[in-house]
Image 1 (cartoon, rainbow over the protein chains, first blue to last red):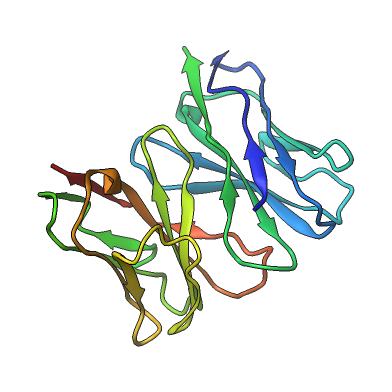
Image 2: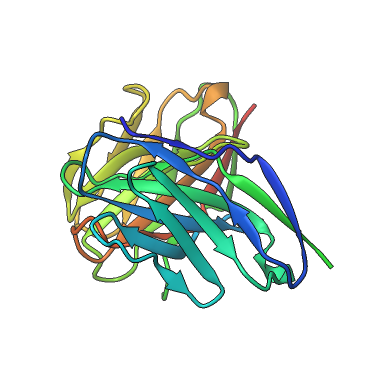
Length: 115
Length: 115
């Protein structure tokens, strides 16, 4: 099974500042997809951003962007102009492009936004 | 409804009792997934349905766990003879297609507590 590692259990950022959440993964596949999900206290997992491994260009969604380093198997999330509503657990997830359908999730990073 | 609906939101049961958790996916979604999320951890895959067919049940932790989706829409996860280690949040997710770049849309989960 693929392994997804989030080495930062907790992070904090000042409102309006920028924060980067780290994620690394282990795979022998060349075709796969990576996702960042946000989970607020309500528990619903909300898709933040996704990246196809075959695309060299880093995905961007408004204030959220990724730094995808395929050779290093790294997929970090950058949140710019942080807002109070960004406070949540953030999960990095891997999905194979070839076999299986399930997501492999990391253990999550709890983000606190300081007013 | 517009999103994935799960019921009940909370369930408390005594050890040894059977429980049934319901998931109502987004209308028309082909794929349906169940995940188990222990406290402080990321979700872990349990099982996957494509329409009414259960294509992958490799994540089910024991034969006490059983899932079904008889008409390719609503799904039920049943746990027999519950144990304390079954206490967790059970998340259901659905996606429109079977392509692996499709995001999964998650419900709010059912928090199961076994006394």
